[in-house]
Image (cartoon, rainbow, N blue to C red; front, side, top):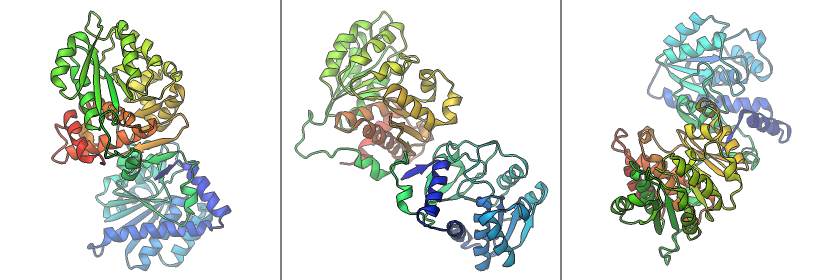
Length: 509
C-alpha cells in the first residue's frame, strides 16, 4: 500500500477534481459518509449514545458536518461544536454547514474552552474534525483546548482523516494531539499515521475509498510504501526443491570481541534460521573456541587480533579473501569500537567484493563516514538505530527522530546504500528516495541482541538471491513478525534468541 505526504494528498485531490472531473463536494460527501458509517459500528449495542462532532473551520470540519447530517438522518443523537463563527467558513465546508443547519442538526458556534469541555464530558462518542493534514505548526487556542477536552473525556474518539495535532508527514504531535480510538483516513494512508507517535495516536486505522481514481493513489511517483505480508513474501526468491546448501547462499559473519561473542552467535544463528546454506563466523582468534561451542551449524575462522582481543587491522586480507567467496557479508555485531578494529573496518569495507550488511559496531567504527561507503562496488545495507545514524550523520537523535523518513532518505543518498533505520515503524530507504515502512514487531524487542538477529536475517536473504532493498524490507518484516510470534505468550522477557528460533515459524517455504 502506498503512503502519502500531505502535499501528495493535496495533489491527488486536485488531480481527481481537475483531471477526472470529480466535484470536490462529492469527495467531501463521501468522506463524511464513511465517517458516519464507521460510527455505526461503535453505536451498535449502545442505544441512546450521544455523539459530539467537533469541527474546525477547514475541510476537516466540512467532513464533520457531513458525518453529523448522516447520523441525524439515522436517528442518532448528535450535537456539533463549531470552533469558530459560521461566517468564517468557506467553500464546501460552508456548503455543508448550511445543509446541516437547514436539516436541524444542533450546532453550537464559537464555544469557549469550558463549553467544549462540558460537552465532551457528556458525550459517549466524539468525532474529531478539528484539524486536518495541512497542520505544520503547534496547536494553539481553542483547537488546543478542544483536543485536551477530547483526551480528558471517557468517550470513544473517531478522528477524521488524521488525529488533530498529528503531523501528516512525520507522525509528530504538534504540541498536543488527539488520542483516537479509530481514525478514518481518505483514499490513502498518510505517512504520519504509520510513524510514531502518530501510529499510536490514531488507534485503529481504516483507509476508505472516496472515489478518487486508484491510479492517482497507486502512482509510481509516490515513493513511500507500507510493508504487507504479500509484499514481503514476494520479495523473497522461492526455494527450489532440488537446491543444495551452496545454492541457498553463503554468509560470512565478521563479528565478536571479548564479552560480545553472543552478538556474533546470534547473527550467525539468525542467518542459518533465515535460510542461509552455509555460515562462517570470522572472529578474533582467541574467541574462536567459544564461538565453535556456541554455534554448531556455523564454521569459524580465527582472525589476527589486537591486544584487546578484537579484530586487528592485519585481518583485512583474510576477510577480503573470505568475502570474495561469500554471497553476503554481515559486518559489525559485537566488534567493539577498539581503535585497531575501527582501522580494520574503515580499511576493509570498500574492498569486500560481496553485498554487505553493516550493523552495530561496524557502523560505530565508521564514525561519521557515510562517504566511505558510497564508493563501494557491491551493494551495501546499513542497519542503524537512531543513535548510530545520528553519529553517522553528525547530528542528534532528536533530529533523526523528528523526521525518520527524511533522515533515512538522506543517509541512503549519502552512503549510496540501503538504510534500515530501526525502531518502532522501521524505515527502509534506498538512494532513489523510495522508502518502505514496516509495522511488525513489538515493545518486547527492547532488549539486547535484536539487531544482531536482524543483521543475520537480512544477510541470509541477500545470500539467497534477494536484491538488497528486497532483503532489507523482507528482513525487517519477518524479523518483526517472528518477534510478534515469539511474544504471543507475553512480551516481557522476550529474548533475541527467541526471535531467531521463531523465524522458521513465520518464513514462507
